[in-house]
Length: 168
Image (tube, rainbow, N blue to C red; front, side, top):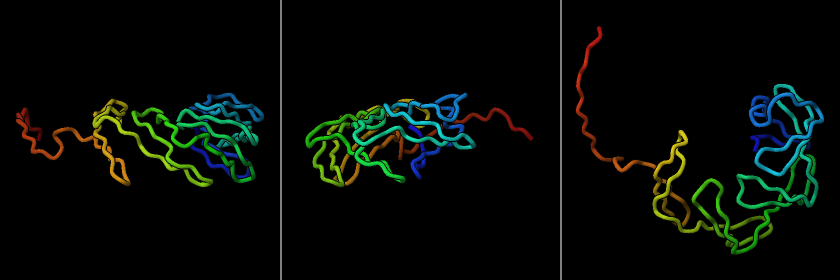
């Protein structure tokens, strides 16, 4: 989805981000499919930023590929779109693009309490450059610790170095 700021019923994205996600040759009034979701928006203005207006109404069900659950629109005003997650207590969700899953522990009017479900001690996760990196994962009462250090981390390393030339 776009990294966007929602104000006065509109959200704006930088023009290059819009072109990368949607493509070129769009005009005011075009209806745009928000990437990796079931949501549409109407193109309002194009300058160095692109302004769009969500095409949502109360009761609309939405989904996004990056979210583990669907949501329902419960309120729309000039500054906010309020979404209610479609979850039930004890329901289990997989976290997209991750080996993790969560269980819904409790739900109230303002919060959802989740717990991470046990996973193998070491899993492969995407690293900085997209390669898969063995990652040790552990939990305590308040945190999830993800350690992508190699087995040699913290150990003394000895290298044999051969001097090939000296440039002056």
